[in-house]
Amino acid sequence: MQDKKILNYISTVLKNIPKNWLKLTTHRLDIYNEKKAKIQFLEEFEALFNTNNSELEALNSLSTAYDYIRLGHPLSCLLEWTIAKLNNINSENVISFSSKTIPVLAILRKNLLNNINTQIIYTDELPKNFDAQVLKNTYGYSFQLKKITNSNAIPKFNGSTILITQEKFITNTNLDSNIDFFINTDENIGSILVVNGEHNKNYILDIQHVRRRETIAMTPANCLTALTSIVEQSAIKNTLPTENYKTQVLDAITAITATSTKPLIASSGLSMQYAIMMGLIDYSLENHKGKAIKFIVPPNCYGGTNDQARRVAACVTNVEIVDLPVDGDNDMVQSIDVILSKIALEDAIPYIIAEIPTNPRVEVPDLNKLKDALSKMRKIATGTTAVAPVFILDQTFCPNVHFLGSGEILSTVSTIAYVSGSKFPSGGECTAGYCVGNTKSLDFIAKIEMHLKICDNEATPLQIKILAKQMSSMNQRINEAYKNTHEFVTYIHKVLPDAKINFVSEELASQGFTPSVFSLDLPTKGNSDEEKEVYKRAMNLKLINLMISEIPNESKFCVSYGQLNGCYWTIPATSTQGTTKEKDKDYIIRVSLSPNLDLEHHKNVFSKFVELM
Image (spheres, rainbow, N blue to C red):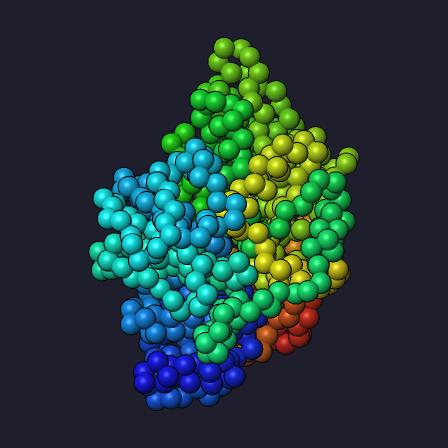
């Protein structure tokens, strides 16, 4: 009877779901409580279930679920809740993934760090591209593999037992007491991981963190497919786009970047970065045996980048993170030169991850000096030539700039550039990201592609379809959004001249650096540095709250960039820099404008704020 009630309720919910549940890739910070995240959403959803309320207005008013759709979103929460309810377990024990292999890697990661043995049992076959040797040799994971014919005969094991299967119905689970983790995979939509038993509860947050940093949750569209199959009590239907859009997207990336190497498309920007890191580590282990690997990363860069890099280093014994100061009083080129000289003397392998322009200060280094610093031949302590660096460039803020093509500024330096697809490439409609390399990086690209496949982190067919639709207009949208941003920045200079604004110069814009984001450091007051900081932080929130309340249809308190419409406001220190060390955080405002918004309205509201200061 309870199962019937659940299925009937979910059926009506699916008919009334808010359209944003399928389309949004970010979240509103003004209605988001990170500490409660999924819990708050499901508590409110359960209250609706108990009163049989599935009205659109009620669903639309639910609190934000998780953050972005990498970690989770309303439909992934709903799918996990439904599977949990039908199996009489806690919803937090059910975790969906777009990838079919990453849930296994998430468990292996925790067991590696805690020195726990792992046994992987499978009934039919392992996920496609699952490579046991690479996972052991490159990722450092330890496990035993065992194929069985009867999933009801699970042998006892001193450690964690993972069962991987391909059940016809997505709600089917095997919660045998000898199974610690049950993973049901589907070729079309991803996988469902069930954490079994109270003694494994401490794995849940760690598994979710892997989903947040190295992959994504099952996509909204695929969650809807899964929920529909549950309601209809049928097997998953193949709803993939019938037309092949991948060639179209690859051609668009090649044209936009003016490169000739094969582009790679991942399920998210961080999925792409993870493949880049693991691919380069694999290359180093194979070609530079015994040498230390140094990833050089700005300490205040986007929190996901910073956190992921340090997470990788925690798992691979010869990998270390080196801080790269780039913003404010620090010069990126000078910092790189000093660090590379030091690493050369150690005979280590240098891999540099950096954003251009930087986030959130929107700074661009002297590119000729950058090329010289990266190209300089350095010597190890014994006098022989040091291994040349690889520059890993996050150009999300300016994906239209040609860095790598023939004759371009970084064409002669081993460079890989990547872009978060949730920004300008898709206009905020999906998370898929991509990377390209110059001709000096061909060997690395092959390794990166291999790890993208091993992690099953390639973009989904629907993500590729969205990119195919949006990328043809990307450069035009970048140009129009920059014009809006330039006009808004000019206006702020006029009405609030004491504010410090970080934005590209006219000279840089003429070189093609036309971001539509700027950072705003508001003027402050007080008798001490502490009082001034408190006042400024209060004014940050006052400005944002005024903008989003006065222009609710366009101004959002969100972390986004490159969106199709509106204006997004955030404070990096409390959003994108969430995992950054406190001393490196930026308590300033970051603003991003789209090609389509009522700019005059935004100017008027900003003037009102200035009057209220």
